[in-house]
Image 1 (cartoon, rainbow, N blue to C red):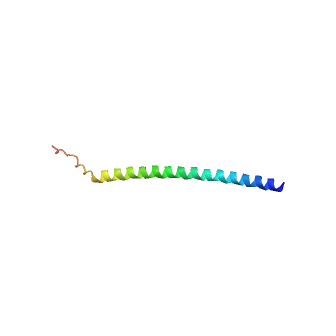
Image 2: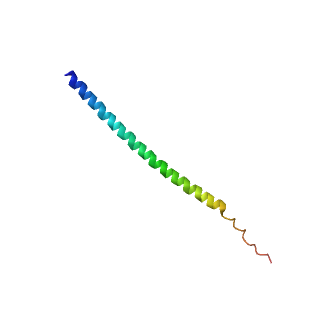
Image 3: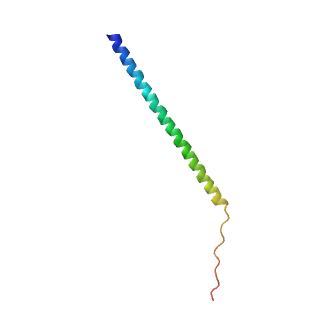
Length: 67
């Protein structure tokens, strides 16, 4: 009986380890997706900043002479 008990425990440990590996892979995939999304947002922000810095300043509004 000891053999079967040990075999069952080993099978349980392997199953638990497989579950943990699957969870880790899922977490890693979510982190990768989040990293890509963050990088894309950063690129958009940098582009907006670059465009804003290159845009010529608008002239001050015309002031009509007071009569």
